[in-house]
Length: 435
Image (cartoon, rainbow, N blue to C red):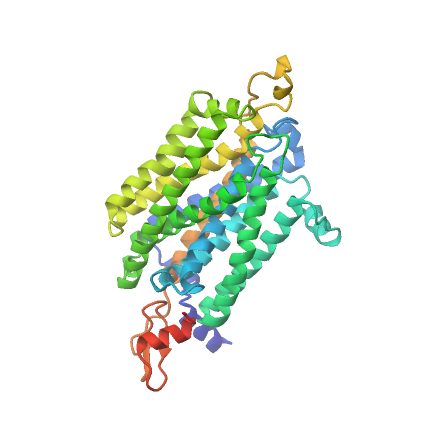
């Protein structure tokens, strides 16, 4: 048993709890803060569950989706985005993207669990939902599909991560492909949850299912850049030549995706201003109650500043990339908030000319909602820092001696073996099934 654990430890690069014990006091303090945040969040969330959400949450009959939904969307969108970005390497054979696969898939799983932690406290009876989701499926409900597809997605990602650790590239690629397909289906379905609501003109239409896919890819690029460069600050050894090339490639892709989302946002504003059903909400972004959210966080921190800093970084200034993507993560959170909350601010009676419904409705997140959201964020932070130490910065086993006939793959870093007459490049293509 002990021998098997040693083999797994060597193969997976698993350093165990001992690595946490040997961490610096500042590292332990950071993990302790995230642990306390998660503990406080779950405690307050359970208090709200016992007391009754209607008594402690700021949501109302008119505004039924609050900050918990926007935080949940932030997490699951980032998870899907990490899956999309990682798939470029180990699913589609983009060699430059292969070194980030392990961290990206790991964080994809962590973000999905973080999202589930948050949505747990938004559903009045989450246990009943899980049971009836299986024994009484409603195939015409977007909500049913969302729960089912995200559940399948999580299973595929966990199995894919296992095969990545085992360096079984064929099966990890297959699971990654299934995870990507199911993840994109789940994510476009999430957009359809909003886009198919006739009574909410701000959301209604095909815009959101398409926007969510590109936005997820942008979030994934941002997240993997942030967590990899932060990992480099923790353990500079992870930034070898292969990882530097990966960071440069992902930076270029992220710059492109930010530009695409800016394009989407410009047309959202232009078309919204000439749409009677969307005009009130769009004006609240431009000059009203949500102007600071929109201009400062969503536009400046979420897109314009990161775009400028990432271009300036040229993909090799890791400090600049870390700050750019860290600020961008904050901006993206507000981006999700600006989709969920303002879409409900216009009363369904507004278009009917009801005098009492001519102004925007208001919503302020309650203490319980904020703390329940921080439960998920605290869990993600704690899992990230624990993973960086226990999984040795998501590096594979260090190969001090390469066996005869083998070589260290420039893509994934594992030892591969060449067949007779085969070059290293040919062997890499065979192992990773690159076309």
